[in-house]
Length: 352
Image (spheres, helix red, strand yellow):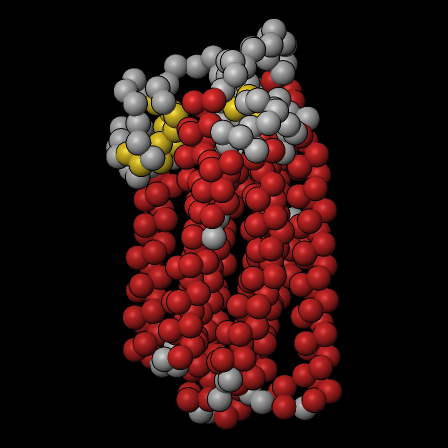
């Protein structure tokens, strides 16, 4: 029998550890470009200590909103013996933290615009060659990462198959099999997220176009890499679960070696992610905010969310900012994924 609480506690610890750099980055994000800027709004140099103090405090408190939702849910699952669903909650909340960050940033920038010193000056236009080839998932795919993920998932399924064929006991393998299905579904979710990041549209300003495109590409590469690193960790999970289920980890030497290997992989991925993130932050610091010479998608003022089936974009620009389009293809895909998650949980409950 798997000690689900041990697995769940390990996931909680690693997820919390992995989020610390993101919290630090987003904590400092309003003043990334130095004094005189609050995100993309030009403000007074003493804005942080003066008029912006309450705006900054409210923004930073909102960063922890997903944690306030996640911790009671996870604690309830552990106390009620449903630790197997902790991974699903962690994955969902990991996505929610990004959405929450964008929402908090939009609201903070909106409040800061009341104290904007002046409109950002549009720089003179420049000549630049742009590729009309659409971005595809293959351009942001590392074959070695995909091989590692395939080996992890395939090895787990093969291990389960061999144990079933040798024992003939479905009760022995059904729990690791069901949890492996959950991890495979999480892999699909991260692939959908990565595809959405790659295909997201972006309007570059007329001035300093090359720098803005370089900044956007750096952010795109970073986000795609984070998805891949997360997928690697989720590919290791089924092997650890199989070890608990088939009592392989009862040997202290094997258990210590497996734990050491997993922590080594986690440390390497954390270092690679932080290295790529520092490269992105360096590009972001050199990129000056600019007004876009483009007509808004919607002529009227918009709220944080809207429903515009005729417009496929995820974010629509209105006269007063951006709005999340709940009728976009990305939101529809996310809705189908959540519905599939509910179906998967129902199926697992039937066969487990």
